[in-house]
Length: 305
Ligand code: R5P
Image (tube, rainbow, N blue to C red; front, side, top):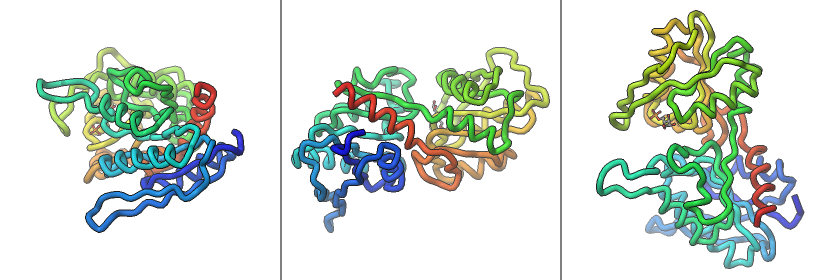
């Protein structure tokens, strides 16, 4: 990457911004971020970004509204300071799960969020294993180049290195949309058998998971992979079903470990202690980094801009 590029961080995940800058061989730029006494955000670009491509790193877990507004202010400030292009690297993109009007009166939140980012000055968007269940390509709603990179190969390789899996393991996606993630993790592990379960959601924490075909599980180790673990309900229900089908040790890897309230405890209570995730959302289960896939995505987007 050219020395004319710079990486700046929002306040959500500064360590990741440093890792991405290192993977790109780019400079770390400075943006002053603070709150006014009334809680509103203040941002000021403190590095020279004139004529440079800037990667804005932000992950939107835990305080999505705050980080969204902060990202928009940063993008506008960077453009105002003369940045040639702003690429937002948002591994965990909030609001992606409201990607349809499920009930009358709702809004497709992700469409609005994509437009808000675009209109504040973001030229390119990079996400990691985004929840694209119904909107397959964010470029269509964002109105500019958007790439979704994946950390599933890293999660798969980590499971092997940690001794949680080997070539006889079965990789499971807990719902139909997770099948490509299971396939990708399985490929990186040289594992032949992968499958997806079927999930029906009745409420935020109320899900039912069923199998749609016979998966030979008796005594076999299983690795469940998913994009997000939020309340943990999906993983708990999937593992109950897998255990009923005779599965042996179950391990779980996810891109974004949100773990709201006691989600991790609920998963551990099921007897699953091998839970790991990426640094998209840093927490005690973080074992792999999204920095390199994001750096690759940045290089690809720079070619398009
Ligand atoms: C939804 O379809 C996603 O892929 C995840 O399975 C879901 O977000 C997990 O949420 P929870 O942990 O609350 O079940």
